[in-house]
Amino acid sequence: MNKKYILALDAGTTSSRSILFDKKGNQIAISQYEFEQFFPNKGWVEHDPEEIWKTQLKSIEEVIKLAKISPKDIDSIGITNQRETTVIWNKNTGKPVYNAIVWQDRRTASICDALIKDNSAHLSVKELFQEKTGLILDAYFSGTKIKWILDNVPNARDSANNNELAFGTIDTWLIWKLTNGKHHVTDPSNASRTLLYNIHELKWDDELLKLLDVPLNILPNLCQSSEIIGEAEIFNQKIRVAGIAGDQQAALFGQLCFNPGDVKNTYGTGCFCIMNTGENPVKSKNKMLTTIGYQINGKTTYAIEGSVFVAGALVQWLRDKLGIIKTASEIEALASSEKDSGGVTFIPSLSGLAAPYWDPHATGNIMGITRDTTKGHIARAALEAISLRCKEVVVAMEKDSNTKFNTLKVDGGASNNNLLMQIQANILESNVIRPKITETTALGAAFLAGLATGYFKNIEAIKNIWEKDKLFKPQKDSSIEEINILWNKRINQIIN
Image (cartoon, rainbow, N blue to C red; front, top):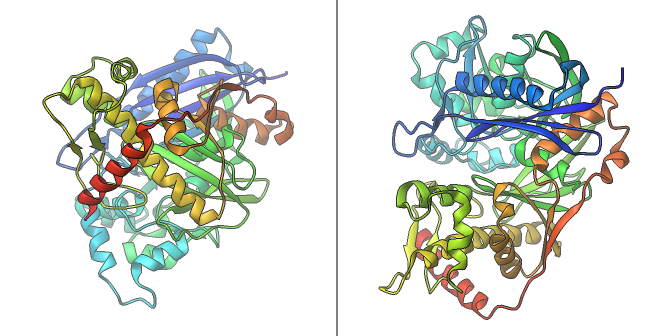
């Protein structure tokens, strides 16, 4: 029987989504359920793994009903996920030993600081981690989160040493649940975000495991990003799980960034800009991350990435904490009510500063406020801040790759904000292209799954699916130079 659809599971930071795609990349149906965010202490962010699973399962069941199809019509499942978020559970009971520690969580900054001060290795520990993993030693990544759980949850380390626990990022957790505990796996795009995976040797690294005191037995097995892994059972129907990629790498694939130098930027809770660097890892000299884009047909594609922790989260903060908007979508109209930001600069370091500063202790600031400052000025300064942070990442990438690009492909919820995209084009002085299908993260997971099963014949077969929605050309704006000068002056006040 000819299967008609691919089911993409998009396990995000604030919600679980399921999207059905057909062979032309059309979105047939979507279901989404938010789950609770927990902030038990300053700088701590947690999720309930059981709630993630329940909302994901609920969205799967609903999307099938909404599309009015049978599970028999689904060729396979592709999974994309928030990456560094860490779950540890008991293999026997299937129950988490602690809440999921989210990628935004900063509690392990002190662990990183202590490791950095250790000079006993032949390289500094900081250099050792970067050399082997391509990453900055930072609380952002999974490795120190694992260590924290094992060190702080009663009996967790003893249970780990007795081979009773399993670690996973959210992809691993969902596959374990979908396959009733038969498969404990992850792919290189997620493994390369743990601080435990050697991106050159493509395996878990014994030296790094020892430094973080993480037992090998709790780590998942490694598979390719596009590979038939096992079978999930949905409505008593077995469906192949055949694609895995961390959300930003999935978006890279979904944006058809297959060639070295291709760049995409996803505007979600944070902003994540990735450049394809081909079959060879590029070591960053500008505090970017060297990572794995995807692995398919035995070929590993590398990338460099810059992360901005706060993007859509900044708009959420304006909505939930300041109350200057009632819904996130109102930000565009409010920012458009003023022709500029009135000299206001917003430093959006609400969860520290990521690339290229990597300062976990940085705090946010709104500078340049006068009695004439309006809500519109603050809203516009917030959009400018997102664009300026992204520019810093892009400039660093250009230096690392010795490449000057003129096109940025964009996706994610905030990419639908036309004003933000125009500001981004103006500040970057380059074209910004938004595709018709902005669900490129989920689409990338669907592509990876479909390529593994033969639903899509080959890479060429998916190239015609991508279509441009809107091109934002840089416009001459006399305020851009002033914005850049103020930004550089004021962010230097924060980091120095």
